[in-house]
Image (tube, rainbow, N blue to C red; front, side, top):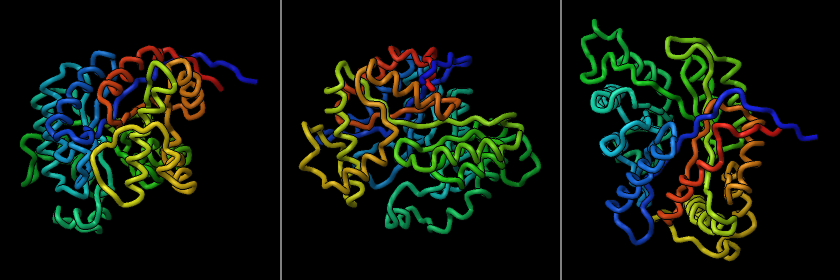
Length: 342
């Protein structure tokens, strides 16, 4: 029998953006859309607006993540902004500390620094970044070094981050496996799981993080954020139509292709085979697509089952008006007072 559990605490809602560049449009237009999304998220009361680092992808304009975050900061006032995330193996920790220390100097305590271990690109581009795959093995040490540069204990060091030192920019660990969960728990840092495209280990990673968490100067108890795809429209059919842009993008990626964000289609039937459909649907299984009334109970059940401290959502689609409308409709979900169905 289904019971309703009243929420005792609100669930903050945040937005993860890839600064999508739709087919036939320029990078400048994609960035303009991104600013509009950040401003809409701020107006609707979203907690954070994060950008993800990806390279060699013509449909994503957030490769220079810190640069674009500065632009977002200049065009917003109150919403937290940050990376979801910076792929640390691509960068020297000192440089990241300087970049995000600069952002903190510009925009105050609105800045978050989410860190990922994957390169966020293909092998050839990784080489072009002058990095090696083995650099990812240093991720735990690099996280520790970054915490040092951003903290208050580097004063005696011959190398310090200016800006950056004493900024204490909050660091998050991002992941889709037990590795990130374990590392976040060890350092006592907040943890964000990439369930919007890699949900298989979500429950296990959350349990591992919470069980192994060690209180730290950064957090006294675990704090976990889950990610999902959220696309709301005035009708279920309209939302499902626009979501085909996301489905096509994932299909193309799985086939090894690249391109700008594709236009939506009336049906995916002739675009994928049975195995590809199953693969894409599995990757995107944490998706809430439809009208407010159709999504609300699904989202409620998801929150009840997994009990995240925060939810971050994304909508990587072609139609900008539909993206903006989805954010506006999110307010009607009443997520801060949504009953949890268990």
